[in-house]
Image 1: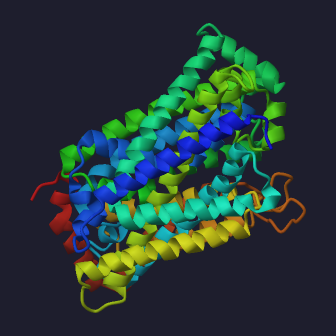
Image 2: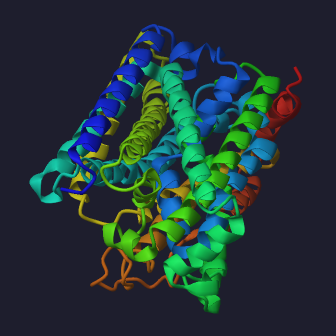
Image 3: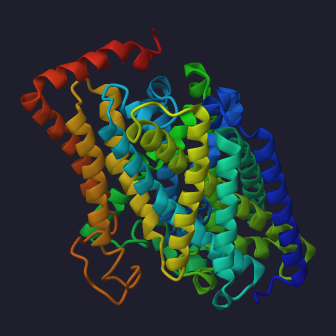
Length: 538
């Protein structure tokens, strides 16, 4: 058992139960009609820009952002600061480059965007494969983290099977949210989550600054002492190292985050729920402002954890620092057993819990939608399925995706699966980003180029990550006692991102030479929709 006290744990349980009951009720009330696809996939595009922006920010800020980024800042200082800034920059890039064209081109899923000028089963299947490849690793990370975190919060032993029970519980709830709530229901859950997250983060950050008389300089100096690293806390290198290769690896990781985090399918899917281009523009403005504010709060909380908790205590609880924000709330509340600790710790724990639930629900909805809409309705059937049939398939695929994710999470619950987050973002940067960029802005992009970008970028990222130092050959690897890695970096993005773009360009070039007629047809289809795509003009 941990030392937070039975009163704190009771309050946490009451808060958990209240949040689950409230969010489930909202999902049921906002659930779509059983025969209305537009309602299920987009919520009738009825959300205001503010609400839709909060929902986008809620989908974008996952539990990994809340816990892992705070932990990296607490332990590695400058490296964590750059990661937080890169996370915000990724959404800014989506806002200025892809948001409006995606809203003009898409209907329900990424497959709709890509098949706009290149219709066919192969494109739909490839879109579904890449969506699952990017979504399932993220789901496994979130569910595995949910099991570990809930057992830590509730003071239960990992060996008792409690972690498995927590994983199954969270997995069951995520399936219910996705299957019953649809886009509108999960959007309401995301809005509740982001409001709670901003509120609790602002409170914790304000308490940190108040502890140091509102002096950021004093917080930084205390963090240098708390980590024992001195001035190195504010220099690059504590996370990956300072050699030339390690600095290159660090740069590659940040590039991957900037290009890939906002291109993940469960994020881009939110853009289709805006009613028009002005609405998506305002929605993204709200989302960017919200995410940027939160990233600034994460920087304050991570630095505060380093200053007030100390790296030794943080790593003793979790080597990656993922419980640092919870430990910080205990320190700021006044110590174990105090009323302030009980209330603040329960609020932070409840917010983390709803963050986990909402994150996995959004990812499950994106994966299930792609399976139902792209694979079942378009790739496997000669005639379009009835709306009721497609929605039934979407509900059952939510169950299937959730079941697979839960099983995988239980199988790897004793592993350090943080590398899967890097893999998912690498796939977003190496496969999804090239495919969307070329499809939306290049007239000469062809079917072969599209398939090469999707499959080539995904395969390159997967192979390089499996044989990277993040999986084996290093003390912090998933398998620290094995060494089958030949790729010297911990992130594949520095190689896989250029490979994805190069594969799309070469594939299109070969298509122009071998199938000139089809290439001309693709170009004609693009030119016919170019005005509407880029300027929303009919």
